[in-house]
Length: 239
Image (cartoon, rainbow, N blue to C red; front, side, top):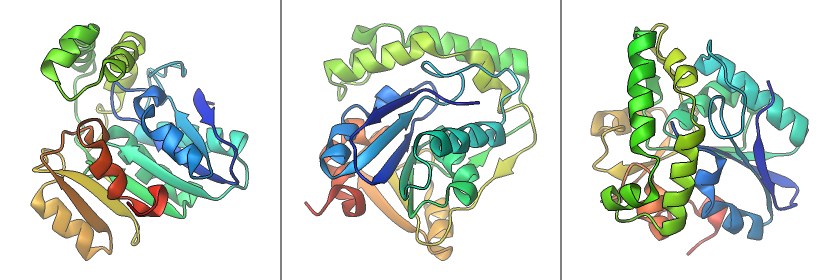
């Protein structure tokens, strides 16, 4: 499966961006121009069942990771990669990292664990309810005052295109977890619902740098854009 990509910039190094659940490649609309200006060729993918990418009613994290690997191989064969994944997209990145071999992997507010055993019909219904609740840009901004008008338009469009059945499928198998390689970076909100202090200690014990942004939302770069880019000088340059 090949995935839809927002393809920007023309550098010899690729920045791969993977969005979270119910997002899309457009979720990175603030980030893409900065990376392109830094000399990256930027690929912001729509994961399966999101945006303009194919649906997959039998999706697993491994199948999503294989689609990412195939798409990168198709669009940017042989290019060095720095990769950023948020939440669900971070988990996909962790599963794909062995084949992608990124020079740098950044995991944003994700513990890299997935609880399985879900009921497919119940999860599909719950995701459909959540999808419908995100269709109004005005409602999104009311609940997330840190969103700009463009952020809200982007996220409402992502909700419109989101396929609940595809994403429900990933939680119907066994519990799973993935390791972040030493030298990777975790950027987390502080406090974070998704990356606890115990998770942070576990990452650090494995040689992963943990960088916390106090008061940030789960979509860290939406609520704390300057802090987010400053936390990653390896990609955005020193502030």
